[in-house]
Amino acid sequence: MVLKRCWESSDPAYNVYHDEEWGRPVRDEAGIYERLCLEGFQSGLSWLTILRKRENFRDAFAGFDAAAVARFGDRDIERLLGDAGIIRHRGKIEAAAANARATLALRESGTPLQELVWSFRSDGPAPRTNADWRSHTPESVELSKRLRAAGFRFVGPTTVYAAMQACGVVNDHLADCHVREAVERERR
Image (tube, rainbow, N blue to C red):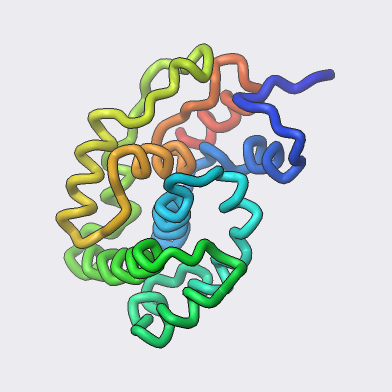
């Protein structure tokens, strides 16, 4: 039996990511912070590049513990710029630290990151083909504005929409994808 996926890859890790992770609801602060950061690092690159380096990113960024990353200073930035296991882009590395501080500020303000992100949940119709996927939506534009106002960086509407897809805030699995219904049940 051939499984219908939203995309096919010759890389088994990419297929596992699709089947077991992409679009599954992520409701914890660390998980959402991680995905926002990784989507920012992915900007201009293949997601497969990030997926292959994800464990290195987790090691480099203290398991995406916002409190730990918020304390990163110049020495940490320089250390990360020398880490070949991650994407060595100063702006993106500095953004991950800024996003950690913004995550803590949101938490302290009484609207944690996960609550803000999930307030933009969208339950539109299932896309029929990947041509139906959009690069951004009105919800991702507004969430991007809210995140930037809170101090986040590298969170444009397209990056935010990719994170929304990855975290299950929207279910963009195709209508005939073999995991769409399971993802929808998990979102309920």
